[in-house]
Length: 139
Image (cartoon, rainbow, N blue to C red; front, top):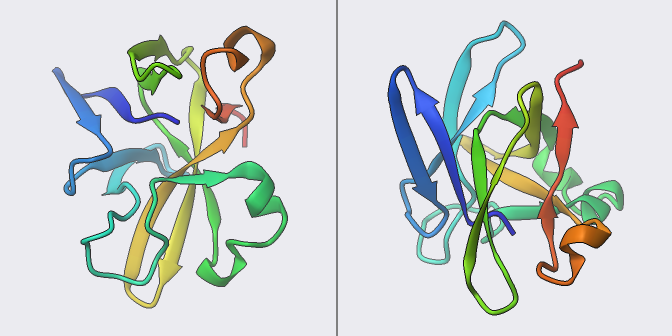
């Protein structure tokens, strides 16, 4: 379910895990700049947006996120971490020119980003039950 990410900020490598209440994800803006936004919401955090760090692609298509004015975004990371069914962590590289798809949600002044997930391909299905949706650089 993408519980962590690694990305570079200038020359520094940043590792971020969802359980950290200060976790932020780097998003690619249309002008090519990078912005940092809160990664989901945890149970004890104030706010009205969903308490999770992920949004299932099928639930987005079904309109379950519509009340939060969802905007598709590109999360710029070098690697992401998935735990297998035995809870062991595995890191996967994100190919250059591709991104993890995110969903930017809003409720009044609250803005948060959720990692969009899909059912894994056959290669990863026996180890993972959800997988981040990887999108190309076009658009």
